[in-house]
Length: 109
Length: 113
Image (cartoon, rainbow over all chains, first blue to last red):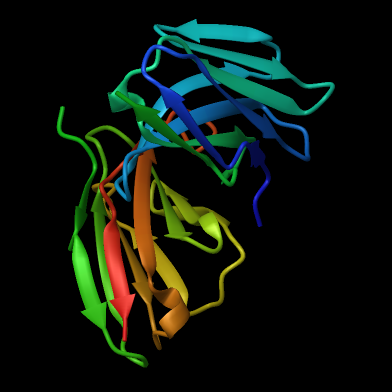
């Protein structure tokens, strides 16, 4: 079963716009990670935020974590066509990583 | 550093057969995790190995098994294949375990006819 639910399931935007994806989870976590998957290939790690952190940046990515609401968001600023992919949140505890349902992002040139 | 490799990349089997998939982690990584990805169930955790020991197992039937060798390479086996086993099987390696950054291989696409 999946720990995380992501919202929206699909998102279409124009290049240059910002994209925001949300993730909710159910149990306590050590950290939350975001991954990108291009068209049925392997996943690529984007960013990891620990449970005692509230916000983290990496290039055009900004991740927030609200442990009281058991939710996280991923913001991609100034999106590019190459950002077209599926994005997954994954909650980590000591022994496993549980993935959410994913958001499919389409960026039109 | 070479990435995670998985072989074979594509596989077609028939119901009732068995299959073995292989994963070579990044050099120095001792943790290898396996995931099944299907359109209906998404990404599901199968199991994780660390230094040849299975540390954790997901909610899959006993037909799914795995092992890890002393060089950290891992194999997973599925016996008595069912149509529902058709999926992308992904392996991921990390230094200490799945709670830290994982590096994924390209996956093995298994089709069961």
